[in-house]
Structures are given as C-alpha cells and as structure tokens.
Amino acid sequence: MLKQKLQQKLLQKLSPQQIQLIKLLEVPTIQLEQRVKKEIEENPVLEEGADDDKELQFDENTSEEDKSNESSQEEFTLEDYIPDEDIPNYKLNISNYSKDDKKNEIPYSVGSSFHEHLQQQLNLRVLTDNFKKLAEYLIGNFDEDGYLRRDIESIVDDLAFSQNIITSDKELIEILEIIQDFDPSGVGARDLNECLLLQLNRKLKPNGDYNDTRLAYDILKDYFNEFSKKHYDKIIQKLNISEDELKSAISEILKLNPKPGSSFSSPLNKTSQHITPDFTLEDVDNELVLSLNSKNVPELRISRTYANMLESFNKNKKRQSKQDKEAITFVKQKLDSAKWFIDAIKQRQNTLMITMNAIIEYQKKYFIDGDEIKMRPMILKDIAEKTSLDISTISRVANSKYIQTHFGIFPLKYFFSEGMQTNSGEEVSTREIKKILQECINNESKRKPLTDEKLAKILQEKGYQIARRTVAKYREQMNILVARLRKEL
Image 1 (tube, rainbow, N blue to C red):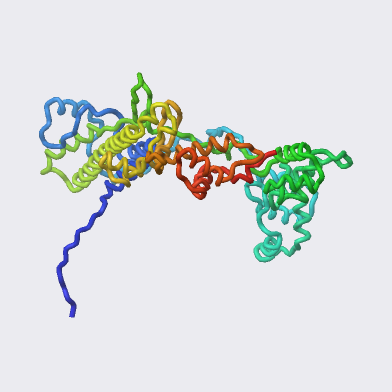
Image 2: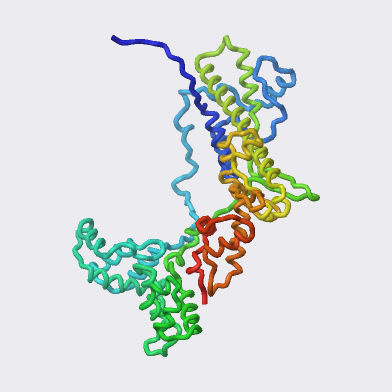
C-alpha cells in the first residue's frame, strides 16, 4: 500500500539573476565591455548614457512635463511590436545590387604556415608519386616545433591500415632524410640531439680544420648525456681538450635553435596577450588614490520612450487586445531585465572597490614603494573578514583582475601569499623569502652554484627557519633549476 506523508525541507538555490551577477563579478574589464555591448544589442530597452532620474517609476501618475515629452520624443508605438500578417514579401528582403553591379573585394595577404612551408619545398623536389605521398604524410605528423615525435614503426602501421599504402621503416627513413634537408635547419628531427646535430652538420666544412663547430658536433654526437647533465669535467677529460675550447664549443651549441618549427610562423599566427588593468592606483601627494577602470564600459540607462509607452498603455487596459497584452508583457520583461542588469553592474563595481580598498589597506606599506620585503602574508580569509564578504566572492574578484600601480602592473593574486614566523616571532610573507632566495642565486658562483641545502642554511642564518625541501618547493615555484643545471664554465 502506498504511504503518503508531508515533509518540509529547507533548501538554498541561486536564482538566474544571482548566477549572472556571479559571472559578472568574475569577468575582467575587457570582457565586461563585450558583455555590456551584447546586452545592449539583445535588449532594446537598454541604452548608453547617464540616467538623469535616480529611479524610473512605472505607474499611472505622470507629470504634465512627462506627457509633453512623451508626445514630442516618442519615436514608435506598441503597434511596432505587433506582427502584421499583410506585409508584402518584397518589404522583407533587401536587394541593393543589380546584375550589372561589380562587387570589388579588397585583397589581403595571407602568410603560410610551417607545414605549408615544408610542402612548398617538397613540391620542388623530383620524386615519384609514392614518395611524395609518404613525404606528405610524414610532414603531417610533424608538431609545431618541427619534430617527428612518433615512431617510424607506428607510422608504417598507420599507412597500411588507414591509407592502404605498404612501405617499410627503411623507405620512410630515406624519405625523412630528404625532408631533414629542408629549411629551417633541424626540421624533421626525432629528438633534441638529432635536431642540434642536423644544424651543426650544415655548418661543417667537408675538408675543414678541426674547429669549434666540429668539436661541438663531436660533443653532441658522443657525449650528449654528459653535456645535458653539465658534467663538463668528464667531457674535458675524455676529449682531452682545454676549458677554453669547451667554452667555445658550448657557445656554438647555444646559438642553435632547439625548436626550428617555432622560428617559422606567419604574422597571422602570432598571438600576444594585452593586459587591461581593472584598477589604477596613483600616488598623489603621498596619498594612495584608487580608481576603477571603466572608461571603455559605457554608462547605461533605461529607455524613457519604452517606459512612457508602457505607462500610456496601462491607462487604457479596457481597450487592450490579446496581441497588446502579449506585447506589453514582452516590454515589461525587457524593462525588468534592463533594470536588473544596471543594478548588477553597479553592485559589481561596488564589490570590486570594497575588495581592492581592503587589499590596499592591508598591504599599505608595500603599495607605498613596491618593496616586496614589506608585503604582509595575506590569504583570502583575511580580506573576507575585513570586507564582511564571502571567501568565494573575494576569490572571484581576485581572479583574472589586474591593478596598475606606480611601480608596475600586477595580478591581484600576486598580493596573496602564505606566511611563516622568524626566530623573533615576526610573521613574514613567503614572497620575502623567495626574494632572498633569488638574490642568493643571482649572486652565487656559477662555477659552483648553491645547493638547496646550502640555501636553507643561509636562510636559517638570516632568521628564517626553513627546511631544505621547502627551499626546493620555492625554487620550483620560481622556475629555477637545481644547482647542477645552473653550473657554468
């Protein structure tokens, strides 16, 4: 038997408006501009420009001045939204050109890609049709750096199954050697060592003397493992050369391009990231002045024409048809949507300013001159408590936002860091420790770089109780190599 019972539940759900507000809070200024333009295009009630009235009232009480403005400024009526079934078809189509008109299109130059560049060189070679097909397939397997990362055996199997072409490893290697003669030098290599050797091989003279290029070639050919691990003493001993000769050979190697494919790119393929700061912080007479970057975001207002139109038709409710009511409902929805969007933008700007002001107040000593040593440890919770906002809100504000200061442009996440205590009990930011680590590594002897253990001892002598593994973690975060790989002659 089916049992029925009543049960009460308390649930929290976000409304569509709240979800949109959260999304607006996350986007940076440059994307906000695009979002506002999109909203203006989709909502005819929304207009650019400052609103003179503090709030629009949509009721039956309108002043004589509003009525006069309505009659003089009204550009269209509600009938514009009511579909007319008797509109001729020719009025719905645009035909501004005759058969005799010429459409002149402006040509523009298009650069060729890396693979197209190789294909052009392949077409200049006299090869059989079968060889050309195999060469084209090989070129198609090159990555953007110019390497063939796949095994020859796997390519042979793919050609047999997908292209129904039977070949052998020997034949593919023969074709690959032809492609390796193409420009840029080093293309078609299967690993870094082969790439560098291909480039050096072009520089070698057939019957030339034993020079730096020949020595560099021998080092990479016979002692690449020792070279990559910077075991220079072993190379000197095995080749019976001097340290100066090794320096000259390494100098030749450093001139080579480890990614030959990336050196060939058309201007259309080049991408650059343009940063638009969301905040601007200026030092005016030793006072920090914060402003929000909204110069590209237009001011918004609700169209007075639509508001007046809705008020006038509300007075004539008795004479409204079904189509009138549907059109009125549409306009009301657009008015509510426009009003909410304007309020959401204002709330976003207000939240950003509150959060950024709290960050500046918390890190005031740092923002005065930009000295990292003066930066206090700060986490999201600290700013959340200071602003009485939720931690997730602070996280959204800090995400993808930038501030322009008098000492540079920084992402907001840069000012958040963990902390640790010194021997004196003072709490310092991890950024201060990283700056000291960077200074130690910059001033070290490159012939004998400082190990993580020695760096930990230096920090301990300065009063920072830090373990070797923590030094290694900070060094990796700063993209600094281990001591052995930082060694130089």
